[in-house]
Image 1 (tube, rainbow, N blue to C red):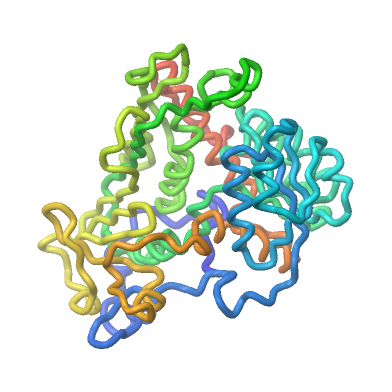
Image 2: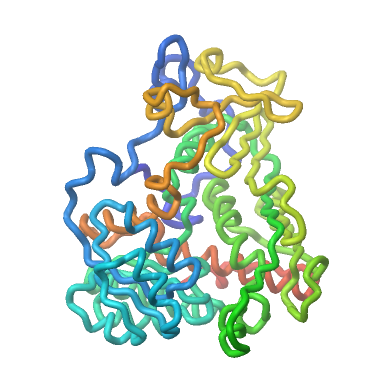
Length: 440
């Protein structure tokens, strides 16, 4: 599997890649993994784990703790993940057990996480509870010798996140246990595909980045009683929620850390309740500015008020821009940019007033299905970001190398950024990062 850079500062390579490092010609075709389909060249990436040919893998006994919306999404993904054998599911609220059992009918269901950790049939545990409940569960799972997949952000406070990451590193060193941070983009074939173009310098010098997430939804969940309502609506209270930038935006902020190979130096932000004035104290609309070294900045915004423009990450350079939107991506060349040997064959899409070169990670399958790589298409339910993340975690366990494609340090550093960005938003101020904040 392509190395997804286990931590944002794992080497000394500058994020501002010089254009001269990008090789043009026949050599660049091999470097970018291009293939010929008829008279057209498409950008094609590796075959993800769990795709046809990977079905006969050793099963791993799995458990999911937390059976709410995210937990059930994880159970659905595990039904498609090669080698995932769900043997236990757990939630303290019994009223949700039946819905979850429909997704894992052979699993034992219960309310006590300690029983999950004591079961020798359980090798790997997914922690899908609300963020502020992660710490005790992760530490108990690691102490019990389990491999752990923890949803992102890994904790609600920096101290808790550091405790989790330190325990995970210790368990890895002592017993080879895998800790996988649930930053799905790190194992998403589309993002891994685009990373090739970023690393080979196709953008020239990166000038700026931006990311957004827009969805008209209240975040409020209905419940039969007040106690259950408080439990379900933990995202609406500051004492339990990291807000939009922490609970949702962490994935897009982590893409910036990964693609730019840099940690931010400061963050400023603001937010307000603009649409859902229902007593919540977590803003439903936020903006943040992340400052990186050498004057490179990333703008982030999110809202629950409006769905226009969906969500995307965009990086703009002196030669080209790349935009990732959902499960698709495009490169937009500058008019005066140096022509690359492969682009004359590439498929192009009209995006607004611009024309983008489609960066398609699964072009072979699309062509085999009789479609064009640039056509709108539904996501294959067996190849969603959650499925590929689960399979990456399971492959790490089977490899017995004690290494994850999205390790504790990666999850910790992304969580530090998300927590600090949320603080900047709620307090309406600029906060500087220090190297000590990112260190374990």
